[in-house]
Image (cartoon, rainbow, N blue to C red; front, side, top):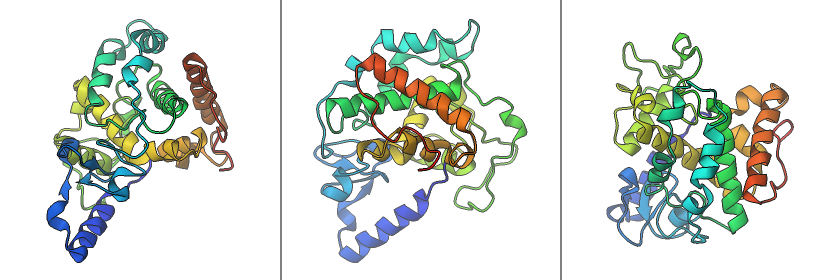
Length: 276
């Protein structure tokens, strides 16, 4: 997954608040628990105005909210149509559930509800395309061979790796790296650095962590109309885009266009990231 500038952005916003004399009105939106009438910004702060309710808004009265009920689009039949593609015996078939996915939306109410109804359907199709690709239609909970890989970025001293802990891919979007586990845990209320395993043992936390990553890194790509190709770049661009793995790009695009077809929406332009 893509590296995050999350910590630096928070510090920048905090400093800006101090200089503007408005810091008492801004609070970190832990669990997006903003008061009524306030928006949870892309970086987890609560307030009003375009910086909070505009592009990247995660919950609250976000600009462009359309009132779509995601549960009416992600029906049990739609969800089952994905998970039934996984072979019998896959650990994910009983781990991933539609109810766990829908329960995450109380924290991230902007998911699938910004722009037109077609925009909502495209974002939903994009999320499930990536989740299906990363997990093999919700078959895998953990990355194949992940324990043998080094996902500790020691330069990220804000999120130091804990001894004997591995930060390989887990969950619907295969959350990876110490800085993602740490930041997701800070926001969602679990100890991501010392207990990364919870993303693979608690289905609700697993979907919350995936949605946290999506809302921080991918949601605004969809709501600003950059196309599905830009979502591939946001999730795994350094490995797949710019001609590195066109086969994997094609696999993601095929899933996305299939889900768009199921939801009755055109997939839009800029589907690939080969030359974006």
